[in-house]
Length: 42
Image (tube, rainbow, N blue to C red; front, top):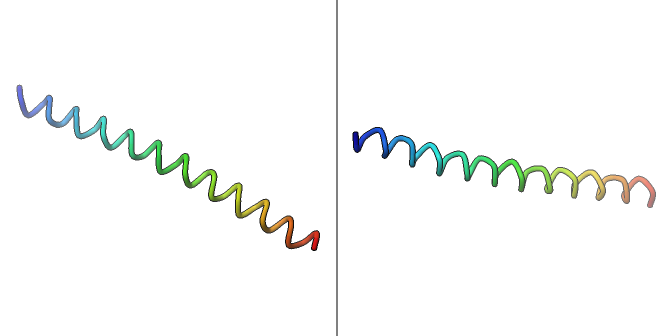
């Protein structure tokens, strides 16, 4: 029983970090695209 709870908690933490990682990666990508566009306009 405790093992199941532990696995679910670990999975929940993984999901949180995964969402955070995707979120940050998305902003880095958007930033890089806008930076690349400003370079081409320059």
